[in-house]
Image (cartoon, rainbow, N blue to C red; front, side, top):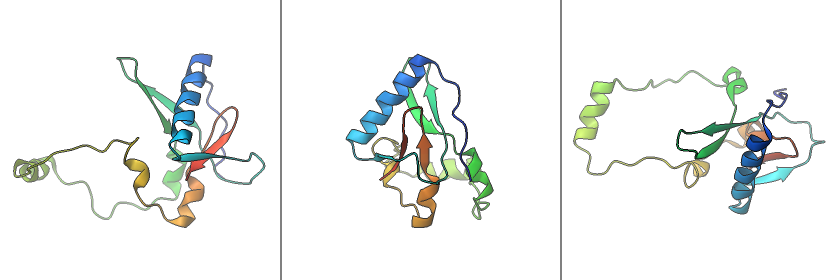
Length: 124
């Protein structure tokens, strides 16, 4: 079982996490689930940048036990730059607008749950 205790957080951090959770819930990316279900969960971590903006992440280090080593390692930087040199478009993935659309196998969905102070949430 991956159930972890909550990280200590300030009242300010807790309000910020709640704001992120409400925004994701309004976008139908996550939903609230019951506390009484036996399930694996992780805890939310608030990442704050120097300019004050923040992003909520799940602390999924416990999942390392379940993951397989990458069969295709990250390419060497010079090779990646050679490929980018010929690119017409270069973009980035925005987690709020695109990352949640990545497919996750059904038997792995139980590992993508986050426990916060008042409730538990999971991806839709």
